[in-house]
Length: 429
Ligand code: IMO
Ligand code: MG
Image 1: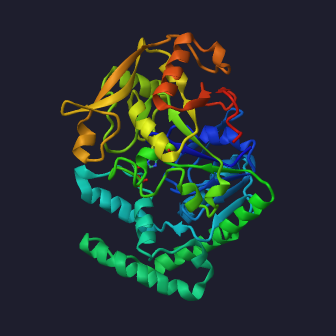
Image 2: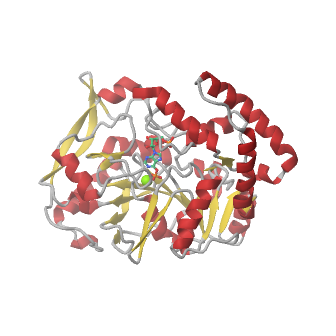
Image 3: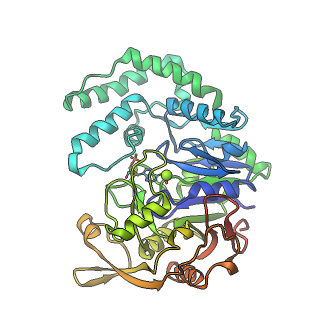
């Protein structure tokens, strides 16, 4: 198998976890390269459901799992998640879990600032996961973050904390909030060191050794292209770059070591949190998709907004990632509909657009131009062979390939990993 990056091409929750799990069977190392525990990746293995947020999905199968420098790591959340995994019988050791020393820490003050900022924003809020992701990345870019490896150097840690608090306490004062209790924070860092240092390594070096030994790498994207800090529906995005190019930056693997990019989409569209969503449905069809697809956040339990497939948005996402092949998830959720719509263009002020504009008002007011395809009205649940799909479902998928200018190599018909149609050789170069 080649070294592959898996990314989401919509607004997240596409089913990246299942595809990563499926492909991780053939990979040696699974790597997270951005985001943090805002992700919620679900794996179903032999009827048992595993939900990972910060840990790479490969951990469940005992693969070497790397949390790269591009990730923001909440040590307390990491411990909780490791405990949850242990309760399910998943063994995590310093041989299987490697955390980059260069990764940025999420501290309690980041979680607090996330919530305070959202409250202060009122109606303009982003609808974040509240995990402190944005504030941690802000500190990273502003060069005052505390990183995993800093926990190992006691003599410089306190000065780093003082520098961090200089900023945060001024900000909190301005927001009418109490200052951070420094002694408490030092205690938290002490605890963090115990949790995380056993796993801390120069991950770029570990990965270089793996590459030299001919091992295969699988890069597990979190969030998705429409939540990318540059290419998404800014400011209703996450605070990291989520696209495939980040796999190199966020792990320290040279870009020439990455062979392939696979994009994951749902057969329809969902979004959780605020922001524009051209094909959103506010009617019974939207509710039917939510019910059938169990569209509630893995992580926060929030109901997801649901709508038809947006081929314009996805095509754009595939381009900025350089996606070579696609995984289409949750096809079976569309089984019940008489007609299925696909957005093939937008209209804005009487003009046609073949891409999603960047201005906020324009994003919120484009009208989708739909193509209507006949529904297949029969169960595709669990089908594992393309030829066994109803003809109209096959036509729907073939039409998506045309509109997206990209071939489909996986079609998922249930949460179980075996219920996947594989076309061609997505594992090759
Ligand atoms: P996975 O990996 C869906 C959304 C939040 C919010 C915005 C910013 O499971 O696909 P943040 O907490 O990141 O600052 O929130 O991004 N969001 C996700 N939506 N799936 C995710 O991850 C998400 N991670 C963040 O809802 O709109
Ligand atoms: Mg999710």
